[in-house]
Length: 136
Image (cartoon, rainbow, N blue to C red; front, top):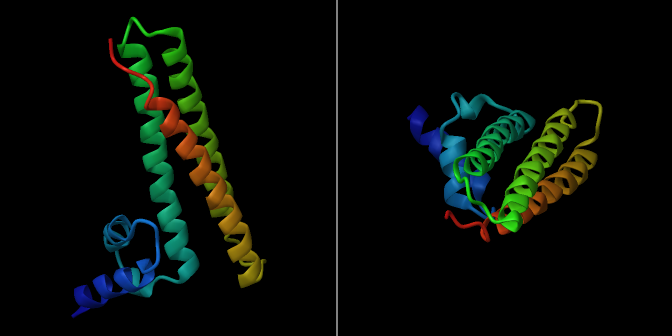
């Protein structure tokens, strides 16, 4: 019964998100999801996202080091990609710290929405830049 409530909460929380399957799989992996507050769920999700973005940044750096004959434009795109991912981590960390209990719920929502929108745009730019890079 506990597992059913856990999955049910993940599904209901993820309704209306851009990537509901990813959202559900992420939330379902958190222990004791049903006992967490919304700020705790958001914080755990942001921390998981930070881990994934750091891994993507490392991948950009690894590609840059592995591929010896990179076109200067491709090399610059990978450098930009790593830098943009680092910027994303910074924004996400700000979002986590912004979950302080001092702010009103509406202020939390507006601040988080702005920060996360910025993080998504930064990550999208990094991904678009990396699409032009080809291994040679």
